[in-house]
Image (cartoon, rainbow, N blue to C red; front, side):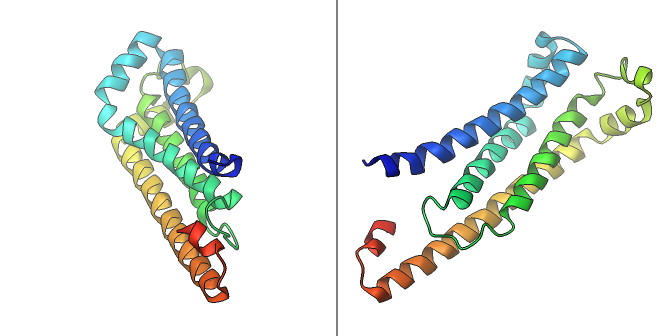
Amino acid sequence: MTVANKQRIILPLGAGLAGAVLLTAVYFGIVSWAENPAHALDLFWQERWIVVPIILGFGVQVGLYVILKKRLFIPVASAGPSGVLTGAGGATSTAAMVACCAHHVTDVLPIVGLTAAAAFLAKYQTLFMLVGLGTTLAGIGVMLVIVFKERRKAIQQLSFSGTAAAQELL
C-alpha cells in the first residue's frame, strides 16, 4: 500500500476519531464539572442508547467531511453543503449533549442567571438529543450521496478517456 493510499484511509479515520473523542470530552466535561466524574459515567451508562449513536454519528460525519474536503477518494469539484451540515450537526450534537447534562448544573446556573435555560434544556433533553442525532444522520446521508455521485461521475469521465485511472477508483 502506497503512502497516498494510507493517507486516504488514516486521515478520515483520525479526524472521525478526534471528532468523536472531542464530543465525548464535552459530554463528560460538562457532567463532571456539574456533579463529579463518577456521576458522569453513571449518566453515560443510563443515556447510552442515544449518547453513543450521537457520538459515533458525529465521528462518521467528520470522517466523511475530511474525505470530501481533501478529495481523498474522488476528484470532488466542490465540497457542496457537507460543510454546512457538519457544522449544523456538530452544533446540534453539542447542544444535545449540553441539554442532557443541563439539569445537573441547576445549582450553578442561578448564579449566572440561567435558571430558565437549564429548566428548558432539562425538560426537552431527549428531544434535543434526538434532533441532534437526526441532524447528524442527515449530514451523513447527504455526504454519502455526494461521494457516490462524484465518484460515479469521475469514473465515467475517466472511462471515456480510456485511462487506467478509472480502474484505480474502482
